[in-house]
Image (cartoon, rainbow, N blue to C red; front, side, top):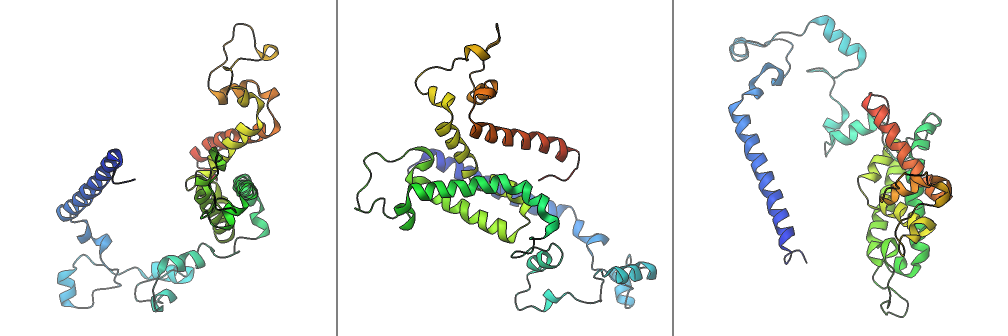
Length: 284
């Protein structure tokens, strides 16, 4: 439990202390450095309205008419101009308004023909999470039907519960991943599914590892014997790395199709993302 674990207490204490220190430093610097009194932070004005305003805001200058006209022509919001509709809502939430009007974020709004490449980019992770959910549900139908409250129809605990990905303790993570997949696939820009799921759920990594252990003969052999290179694939005088992933890459030709697909996707995505993202090219 959390209260009895000294290490977790230390982590929590360290996190709270860092947060408090950050807030104190932020308040201190805001008080010392008067950035909020700069002209950039003052309310925009077309012109001083009176003698008092000129004394208080002597640096305020009228916005040039061509710039105002350009803003009007472009449909931008200007000072003392047309207020956006969200200002008159009972609960004025600007973020939801921006998502709807400027980002086109909403239920099924991204389902357009021109977005097919983005759907293809997100298809592998969507397939992985959907496959993981289906595998877990078909393996433990009663567990999923009872929301994990009962592990068997006879109300008895299993003598030898499944380990790894198919463990009953993984149920909450599977539900979390499935909900994220549904929400992201229906209500978000679909191309962000990869980083959205990759940073939010461990199922993205547990299930591929489960597939590799379950369907790759080379990995199953590691449970009983040390890793040894295959004689026909081992160049003379070359050592095989002990890392299982490097060993699979070394014996690529003898790997199962599932292993090739999984390793090929993750390595390709990593390499292309590294090259494209660092060069400011569209990649997510």
